Structure formats: structure tokens, C-alpha cells
Image (tube, rainbow, N blue to C red; front, side):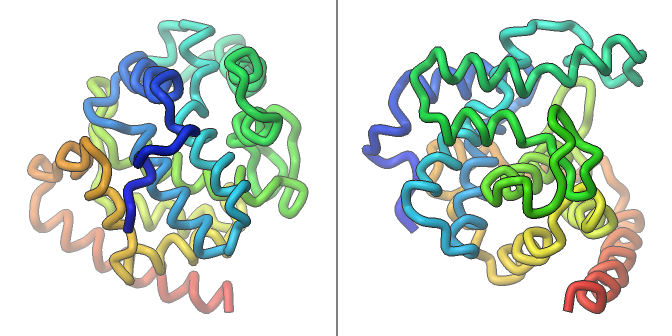
Length: 238
């Protein structure tokens, strides 16, 4: 697969600088935004998104958390439970992100994907409490890709979890936080080894999840739990 960072105007130096600055602010050790963009792009192709929609989704994936950088709150870098005021304040970041990408000259489509990437399938997300098909497909795809990478990418205050455990989380929250069809498509990408587009990213060698801190027995147990969850999920979706 050709790298999504090939000589394309949508991945100009400005957008890549935003992605890098956001990764640094959030404390990710590797190219977190780029990894999300690769997964989102693979999922978009599964759903046959038009080329211009894929274009917008890839851009949005790279800049989706720019609102956090603009807000510059210390609690974004903390693993503690937020208090009520902090949580209300935190839920402003997609709207601030929407405004900031508009200032950067990105399209209205990109602005809205950034705005809605924290909406939940059951309507309990933010900022607009959209539900199910009222959430644009691109934003639903970004929700899955962002969550998986957030769980499996290392940060100083939040160690990564194994891939199998992260996938089990997606399965358990399908139909609640995530569109079940997108979760199923994501699992198929893994099964068919279609996420090797990471290898095309310049920093691909840094995207692997470190699991050395997890005992082998714990990994084996997680894999068995994941297998059971996947079987239950397939029965639910089919």
C-alpha cells in the first residue's frame, strides 16, 4: 500500500507540525496521530468512502486533538479522575479544535469530524450528544481508531495495554460507545493483516506496543477472554 504520507498536498508541513505538536503535548512517545490516520484510512476503504471523504478523514485524524493543545490544561496529562469542573472544561476541546482547524484553513468537513470524534453511538458522547447514524461515518471511524491507539500507545502517565485487551474493550463497548459495524470491520483488518500500512509511515518502527511488562500468563488469559468476547460479538452483529 502506498504511504498515506506520500507527496500529497493534504499532508503538508503545517498539518504534520500540528500532529507532532499534539503528540508531544499529550506525552505520546511515538507518532500517535499518524498511527490513527493509518487505521482510519484503512477502515474508510473498507466502507468505500469517496476519495474526498478519505481525504478529510485523514486530515482530521492528524489534527483531531488540536483543541487540547490550544486549551493547554495540565489535567490533560494526568491519569487521575477529573473533577466535575475539569470534565465539563475538557469536553470543550472538540469545539475548540473545530474552531482552530478552521483558522488553519482546513475544510468544513475536517472541522466537523474534529468536532464529533467524541460522539458515542448511544448518544451519550459530546459535544452535541449525536447518536447512531446521525454521527457522520468518518467521525465514527475516527472514534474507533482514536480509542484503540490511545489504549495501546505509551504515555508517561498511562502505560499501553496489549492489543488483544484493547480489542476486547472495543467489543465490549460496541453498541454503546462505538458503531458495532465499525468495530467488526476493525477486527477484520487485524485478522487480514491489513494494518501493515503502518510500515509505510516514516516512524513505523516506533508504533509497536511494548508488552514486556505484562506477564505471559496474563497475555494468555487476555487472549482467551478476547476470543470469547469476539465470538459473542459476532453472534450479536450478524
